[in-house]
Image (cartoon, rainbow, N blue to C red):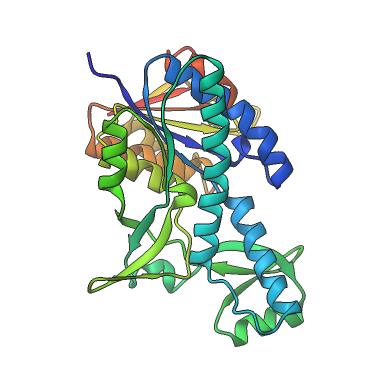
Length: 310
C-alpha cells in the first residue's frame, strides 16, 4: 500500500520572528512533523517567511544606508535568502528529531522559483507591506525610486506586488525527491517570484502569497491531503463575535458561499480557504485540514480541525 502524500503548510507561528525564536520554535515544529513521518506519511513541507524576509530586507536596506557603494538587494534576492535560512533550520531540526526516534530518512530543501505573469493586476496595485516603518522623508525617497509606499498609523511602509503563481520551476525535482520517499522542503515563503523571458528567468519585485503556493504545490504533486497549520484549532464562522463557532467540516461549495457572505473578510484565513478550494478543484478526491501546529497529530486523524472536501 502506497503512503499518503501530504503537503504541510507551516504558518509563521511555527517559526518565530527572530533567529533565536526560530531556532527554538523549529524544535517543536520538528516534533509535529516527525509524528507524521513516523505515522508513515510522505511529507512535502512549505512555510511562511513573513518576519524573516522583512528582517532580511530591513538589514539589506540599512546596509545600503550605511555603505552607499552596496547595491540594494531586490525582493527576489531577499526571498531566496529567507528560503535558505528557514529551510536550513527546519531541515536540520527535523533530521535530528527523526534520528532521535531511530528514523533515518533524507530531508532536503529545494530552492524554489515560481513564475508569475508580468501583467498580473497585482503589479499595477501593490498591496503587500514589507520592511520597517519609515519617516515621511524616507518614504518620499522610496517613491522617487519608483517604489510604492502606504501610510499606516505607525508610519510609512513600502508595499510590493503579490501576483498569482503560474508554474513551480523546480516541480520535477521536488516530485523526484518526494517519489523517492524523501522529506522535501520547498516553495518557502511562496517561492522566489520570477518572470520568464524566452529562456531566461528574471527576479520580480514581488512576493507570492504562501497559502496560494501551498495549494498549487499540493495540486501539482496530486497530494492526498493539504494540511494548513496556523494559529487556531478550527476555521470559525463569525470570528471574534459572541456568535463565533467552529466549522468541523465543509465542502468547496459551502466554503465558496462563506467567502461570498464575507465570513473571512480580508483576514489571514481567506487565502487559506482560497488555497483549499483551488487544490480541491484540481484534486477532487483530496482533503484539506486547517488547524494549529500543536494539534497536528489529532488533526490528521480528524479528531480536531476543519476538514474541507470537494
